[in-house]
Length: 556
Image (cartoon, rainbow, N blue to C red; front, side, top):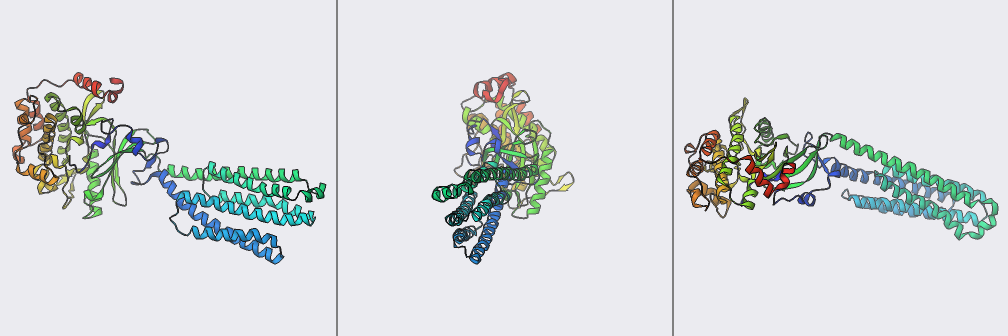
């Protein structure tokens, strides 16, 4: 069925939107969900923003670390060159080459986080290899020359060099403790391997040195210093990372955690969410700005959206979906935060369970009419009444409770609380299957009677399971609403339809708005005077118990 927008996406548990979709289409689990910050606008959330910021920070600091490694390696190379220590030039030369390669690799700012993490390990491995080469060659020469004083001096410097590597990691590389632990463990192993390699390769020299070199003391001291350094580095790195994460989440305190995408349509997306502080379930609808007139003027669209959202938020009917929050971003994207509803919309209900009994149709339509009457009293026209925007479920202890959704396309009258209405030039909204004929002239032609036409078309759908008109295209369907006379309800269904109810529905579908009921209250009165037995709460509860018991919870 052609649709221009959506509203059923704020529901859960309907046959066509099973619960499993929340995990399959959602970005991540609730425990580590995306955060949504209405006060600051639509954004990737603290968790995603932290990851993006961490990637940028990691790239920047890694480049800085590489340049520092290049500078220190070049300085060491120059020192060894002046001292004539050829053995020391090998390791520093390797470090210079590795630093140049890393610097060239990090020149693009588009490196991903996994690439940067891998580069980080490669840089520190290169550092360990370079230091290990120098250690092996320089200390090996000292052992061969039996210069034990020089050997002791160089060996005692080794823990300090590796501690500098750990300190560099803690300062320059933002990481949680597990990643820091892996890196520091790598440095610890890399610091011990050269000493063990020397003792194995130069066994004869160590035996000749005798008591001049205490190998156990050397290895144990180096290992102890490295382990202490690793402990401080891991704790420091984790603490700094934790401060950054806490700052990001504090920045978004009181906002919403997105649990999974519920749906998307012509207007944007709807996400299932939970308020982080109150643990209150909610649905967040992100609206495409072009449908609110951004093409004409972004500031006008923002003012219009804000004014109408405030007016919508003041609606008090229990049959109107509660609006918790709303706003817009600097990019002109609009959003609503609404209550989460359990049940299904009339679209799914009729598709999956067939046409409804007339008494139930009247029961549900009169609730929708009550909601819309209050909106009309406040100068608001919904303009997109359709089965997908009429939710039915369990609310406040009662089954078959209607909630009117998707007031995001409301049109204000010329005066709403003393403010001049801001219209949307060149924009026609609504759903073709329930399109009032007068709206073919443009969205500005809609008024309260347009909602009556659409609600009557919904009643037609509920009674027959068929659309008033079934064109092959959206344009054809709109033209049918403008030009053709619909068949009476009784000719589209085999179920008995009381004449008074059929008359009420068909009057609501009049082409001329003046021939319809002029208010929703009048339309609801016509529906109620259909000589039908009242649809009872017991009947409603029984229907849900048989068809959707999960919606009722403990009330089933």
